[in-house]
Amino acid sequence: MRETYQRGFQGAILAMGLMTTGSALATNGYFAHGYSAQQRGMAGAGTALGSDAFVGSINPALLTRVGDRMDFNFSLFSPMRDFTVKNEPDITPVSGSGLFQINRLDEDGRPMDEVRSKHELFPIPGMAFSWRIDDKSVWGITVYGNGGLNTEYDRGRATFAAGDAAQILPLQETCEGSFGGGANVGSPGVFGLCGGEQSDPGVDLIQLFVVPTYAREFGDRLSLGISPIFVAQRFQSWGLQAFARFSENPDRVTNNGTEFSFGGGARVGMTYELASWLRFGASYQSHIEMTNFDEYRGLFQKDGAFDIPSTWNVGIALIPSHNHRIAIDYQRINFNEVSSVGDDLNPNQFVNGCARPILLGGPVDFDTCLGGENGPGFGWHDVTTYKFGYEYQRGDFTYRVGYSNNTQPIQSSEVLFNILAPAVPEHHYTAGLTWQYSNRIGFDFAVMYAADNTVTGKNPLSNVEGGALSLLNGGPNFGTDPNDQDIELSMYQVELTFGVNFRYD
Image (cartoon, rainbow, N blue to C red; front, side, top):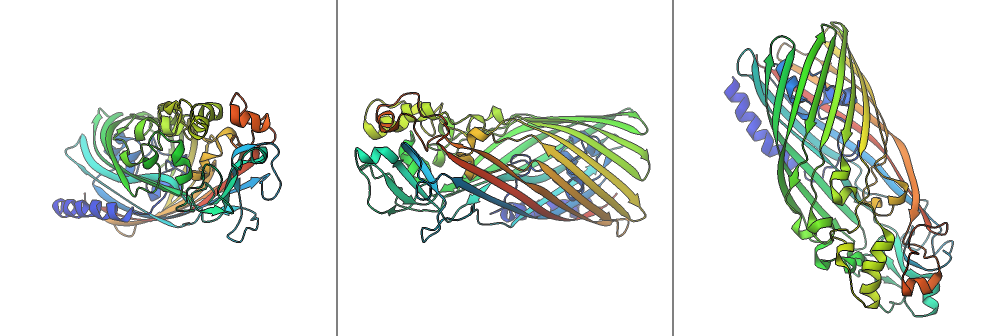
């Protein structure tokens, strides 16, 4: 019986790798709030409380409590993402001069209330397998995904060198696409700043984790577990051609197709039963070093480096009776460890060291350009998440509800580049149930709603204090000021998860 399940699981891993094409995920930054229907039904709470084979994704020590079983999950995830820009040059003129401004216009040049990302429904598969070695030890495999940097905007325009600078030299030009990747609208400027290729900007990041786990009980109260982690991630970007000239590797910024990256790390965990009704759990995932995205080394800092940050979580499980269980978790995701994600956009450094000398001549500090050692990142802060879940069992049914709240990874000063990755939700509400159809087969269901949230900030490249003279001569005038454009990033999410589990002990 076990050999049959093992062969089926090996084939399922291959099938999952194919199914993840085009998927997206974003809840706590670009980390999922949970990786199984049971976890998702409790908002991801469960560091000290595990009941399915997916526990290897949160705390490998919990595998000793699962038994011999196999779980398959399939989610339909729907993120609704949009941005709004105010003080647009084609609607309300921006005073002074600007290096880069965004216009939320449709294909006929009419202003829209918002620019909304396409592709709002994504399939997300997952699977896990566990079986006992002996009375004290167990091993298993968990396969799941992260993602979320998946957007594409098919409307909008961008203006380069706007405002007073056009009165000195014919610098200003407007381009199709929110990041100026398309053709000119009107006459080209002196520098030919439009991308002239694909106008619709977008990015796509997906991470696939394969996590074997070994766990062992020590006495009646303590369990320890360890999981080596193998990761494959995939990325591509498009419609960013206008920014390629401001990179240390201009031909490795955008429109280079799909690129893969591989790496590995580890997760360790423990659980300890303090009393029959109280259990404590903790786990830590290491920083995962990934091979660089060579085809995008002109976009991401340090020649295409895009590692996976370390995370750690602690939790308690309260079990007042056999049919009531409560889980409370604390999770920390250290996005600042990854330069491409955690480093800020420093507008003065980027413009004075890279953009101005490239356009006007002079020594270029390529370390400050896109892809450089000190180039712009997404500016994400570390995320702290609190998760609460409640589970009630009655007969063949188990009912779940949950809530999680995370701190905001995207600060108001970093909204410009995060148009491409607007992971701004903070409050997640979940519910779910399991129907144990027979001793061997059960069915799981979960639903999640992440409430609409908005982060508003300035576009620091849209207005230059001091006007055209500062634009031409440089200086400390490229930070945010009251005349910069206001950008609003908004997002809400809905997710349905279906699962089936098989027990063979």
